[in-house]
Amino acid sequence: MACLLRPQLFLRVAKRGPSAPVRGLRVRHYSTPPPSQPASAFRLSALAIGLGGVVLGCLVGSQLFPSSSSTPSKHSRPQYGSAQEFSQAIKDLRAVFSSREGIVSTDPSDVKGHGLSTNSYHIGVDHSVVVYPESTEDVVKIVKIANKYRMPIIPYSGATALEGHFIGTPGGGICVDMTSMNKILAINEADADVVVQPGLGWMELNETLESEGIPLFFPIDPAPTATIGGIASTGCSGTNAVRYGTAKAEWFLNLTVVLPNGEVIKTHRRSRKSSTGFDTTKLFIGSEGTLGIITEATLRLAPVIPTSVASVQFPNVQAAVQASIEILRSGIAAGIQCVELVDDNFLAATNKYGLSDHKYAVSDGLFFKFQAHSPRALADTARITKEICKRNGGTEFRLAGSDQEAQDIWADRKNAHFVGCAIRPGAGSLATDVCVPVSKLPELVLETKKDLERVGLPYTIVGHVGDGNFHAQILFDGDEELKEVKGIVRRMVHRAIALDGTCTGEHGVGIGKREFLVEELGEGTVALMKSIKRTLDPLGLMNPGKVSGKTALRQGN
Image 1 (cartoon, rainbow, N blue to C red):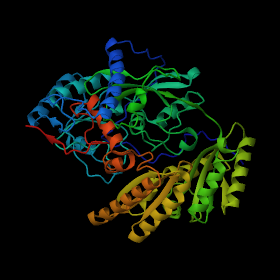
Image 2: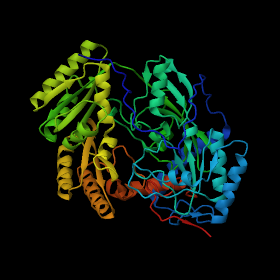
Image 3: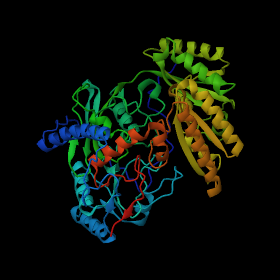
Image 4: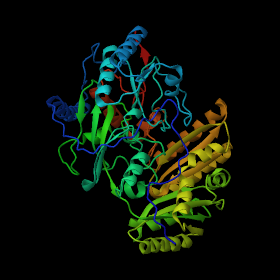
């Protein structure tokens, strides 16, 4: 029996902590005017010309920037302000926002809580101060003060990132917590787009659209509490990627960005298409807050299509992947919204710790989400999928018979991280991802599982098999086991790159994957990325040390 399930619904299991308050979600229906400030338009043009200059400069091998105290050379380390200057910066922040309570915080729990994540193995680093802006204008004021005192700026939103994206900078810095900027500014239903602030959660957006009777949704579906700003900044994706792509596809039409010098730009207008020069929107997607702070985004929306959910078991990973390849190369491919690989360890853990009452055979398997315009079309897609799975050794094909059953099954998959953590209570968790061409996924998963079994630490594996992307979550206790885990991850990444893959399919680089960039992209590409960073952020203030930055940062005298 097919069921009609909205694509974005599943059970929440995570809540925001006290360091990330969510203030009232408000919807205002109006159209955002196009950028009209001459300075912003000039800055956008200069940015495009500047990027062309970066490429030319790299090609001819010339030095892009002269050495000076205000603009470091390409070989110098950023020099930040002194402790006294940082203290004065905090005083200036308090003075600027003195008319509003709760905007500036130096509470020890705030600065510490914003500099670490219980979901990550990276060692936390405290910030000096946490600021909660409520508008683009607030962010500009923060950035201007940071420039004045040469104080690093670290953006923060949903706190679901796993690779140390929002940990503090040694010596201190300003954490800009965007969770108060969580409003929907405009819903343009006829154009199937929406204008939002970066602190809005993608689930909150979809729930609001549903409650207002608008049959549209935002299809990028990472962790339940992820926000629009974080989704853009990491270029991430989720289970829907096989059908809808990632954040680096065409889902972000325009971004409002505060540049490192405090200038505000809009990267595009609201039209669906444009061939006007450099795609500056994409420049900021995946930049992880190192090139500017996103304060507004215009998003494309997709129509809500009826869906159904199924699970099926396989004797091994090879059989599961082969079945998924045949399905995605068949005539029903357009009806596959999601196809997820789960290993035997994950299903064993789900049987014990999952929030639903469903029990699964302990073997490798696939979870499917189908979509079609009618129950009959859904049933046809499920029938053909079952036949292909059976030819490849699939058993126990179970199609959800109701909305609730579909939600429960899909919640089991979406809550994979929390189920994995429950295997070893109190242990550290390293969750990482790689991505390879789909046909290479069985080889990579099998070699990784052999490595994990040899080491003997508890783990689970899940993956977006339709994209060749898989996640390993490994639990450890103490420094010695963490050292073993890091070795496993390095070997996994080296295998992925050797198979023409990537060190991260959707988690982002942060500090956890920096060391693999040259191996994957080559020295020239990484040099180009660093040159773009220096062009936009010559003082090195924006989220220093993340993505391509590797220099030890220190406070100046």
